[in-house]
Length: 67
Image 1 (cartoon, rainbow, N blue to C red):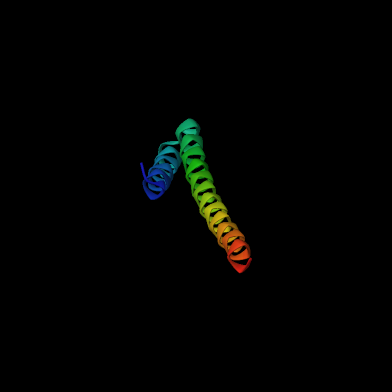
Image 2: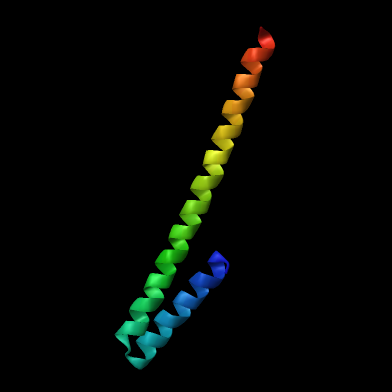
């Protein structure tokens, strides 16, 4: 499922847990939100890695074209 969905579900669980006094559900919601944040960070890192790879390939191709 999408990152935003996971975050929203986590916030809902956290709020529900707080409302009914269920610390386990509250903690589970916080955990879901943290997972969502980790997924987002991993996606951003993957995007940057692909960007750097593309830049490196372009530079290498440029070096060989000059010869």
